[in-house]
Amino acid sequence: MQFELIATATFGIESITAKELRALGYDDLKVENGKVTFEGDEMDVAIANTWLRTAERVLIKVKEFKATSFEELFNATKAVDWWKFIPENGFIHVTGKSIKSTLHSVPDCQSIVKKAIVKSMQEKYKVDWLKEDGPEYKVEVAILKDVVTLTIDTSGPGLHKRGYRANAGAAPLKETLAAALVLISKWDSNLVLEDPFCGSGTILIEAALIGKNIAPGLNRKFVCEEWPLIGKEVFDEVRENARNVIKNDVKLTMMGYDIDGRVLATARVNAKKAGVEDCIHFQRRDVKDFSSNKKYGIMITNPPYGERLSDEKEVQSLYKILGDIKRSVDTWDLYVLTSYEKFERYLGRKSDKNRKLYNGKIKCYYYQYFDNKNAKNRKFF
Image 1 (cartoon, rainbow, N blue to C red):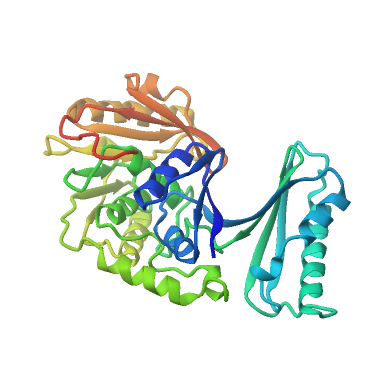
Image 2 (cartoon, helix red, strand yellow):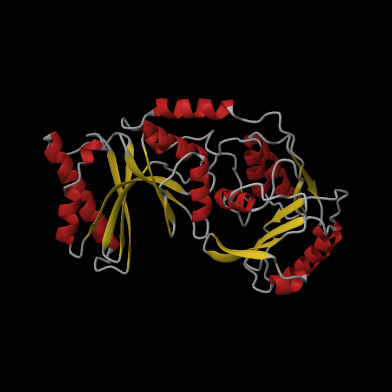
């Protein structure tokens, strides 16, 4: 069955998700704020869920229409052939959001959509009530400027939940954003990669997964595996193919440092669960003691930026130290994600490029410094 699929992404990452999809062989993409739309069948649902590193979810787009009244919303929803997607015993959960629309009460919209779906299926299956004791189907009603989009979520838990991170620490960086930071950079598996504020190791682990070509969703389950429409067999085939293309012979040089020994212990556990513990060396070290004998390298980091530290002077001091480090390894590239507006002032240098990204709800900038002549434009990101 052919679907119109949507890979959702956080603001600023949509183009990276689109390039991932192109690398997987998809074209005719439509890139919009927060999403990339593409065409595919059951196998493509499994491939996108298993392989996309920067997407948040993969949705099936069911219908799009305009509605300014509850009657219009009900009738257009009921007209969908829901039985093509949901079996008679499917458990239907409706979520919603409404932006700049006449129908602004999200709970009411959710209730009406659920009633319309149930009515449609009752008529199809010729029953008075639905058991809803089967596989889960999360339907979202999203209304933007009176245009309603109905989707079904195929992922279940967000795609950032790779399965390796049991404990993320006090200020976690989402795995999807960490992967985006690596993909935007010029790092490849031939280059040294270091993170002087590595925390629970997410940036380095995501880089190792990329370097060894390990699919990020290889070791987790997806809600649509339980659906008759998609099924586990399709995912089993995709997982088998993914295991066959892992680059086990790739040698990676990665170091992660942090002043907190407890969080480093977590990083080691996470790396082991991700299957990349042999790729990354974690060491307890204060950032002011950073040094390297490598002439060329890449540094990607997400340092503290005020939301985690009450003392602004401490943040400023850390960034001055980071500036000293950059000058000591002046043939390295540096990539820093921070929300601190005065970052460049305290680092002591204007970035060659920066990009607005969101770490959760925190607006950040990804500052990029290009000094490593061995770091080529190796990717299309």
